[in-house]
Length: 259
Image 1 (tube, rainbow, N blue to C red):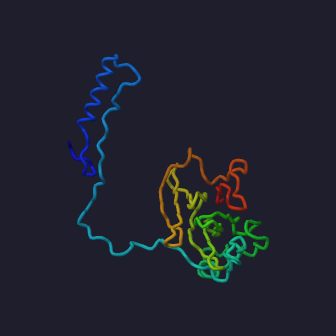
Image 2: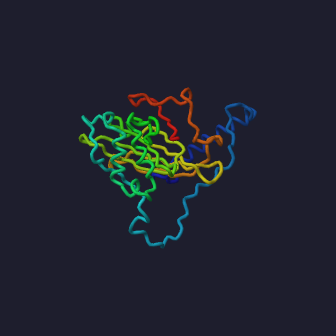
Image 3: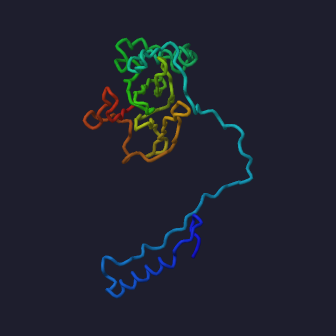
C-alpha cells in the first residue's frame, strides 16, 4: 500500500495485477486487436509557478488608480419605476458633460466638439450627427431586468466612451466606465467585451468587465493582447444578416461595432 493524495491507502497491487492480466491477454491475442492498451508516450511532469524574489516586501497600497469600482448615481436623471428603458440616454450623457466641465467646456477642452454636437440630439440617440450612439439593453446583473449599455463619441479625439447603467430606487446608476480608441464592443452573458486596436500588426487588445454582486459594479476581469480573428479588423461593421441587433427585450445576441 502507498498513500494517495488524500492520505488514504491506494490499492496499487490490485491495479497492477489487472493491468498485467490485460496486457498478457493482448499478447496472447496477437497484440493487434482494438481492445489492447497502447502507450500515449511520456507525460510531461507538471510544474508549479516559480516565484521570483520571495523576500520582496508586499505592496501596502495599489500601484495606481485604474477605477476598479465604478458605482455612481447620475445626477438629474430619473428612472421611473426602475424601468431603465424609460431613462433618457441623451440626458445621461448631458449629465456627464455637466459633471466634467474641464473635459467638455472651454477652448482647450479635449472633447469640446462632443458638447457642441449634443445640440444635434433632438431626435434621440443614434440619429444624425448626435455623438450618442444607439443604446442597447441586456440583463448584465442577473436580476432579470435589463441594464443600459451606452456609447458616445469623444470628439475630435476619435475615441469612444462606453458606459453601463442600472436602475436603483428610481435613479440611474453608472456601474461601468471606459473610454479609448475602440474598434468593437460586445455583450456576452454578464460580461462587456471591448476591443481596441494595437500597434502590433495582427493583434488587438481585449478587455472584459464582469458584474460583481458584492461591489455592485462591473469589474475589469481580463486585459489581454490577442491575435485578431483570422487577421480581420473588428472595426468593420457586421451586416444585419450576419449579426442581428439585440431585440427590444434584450434577449437577442448583441454584437455591436462601436464604429
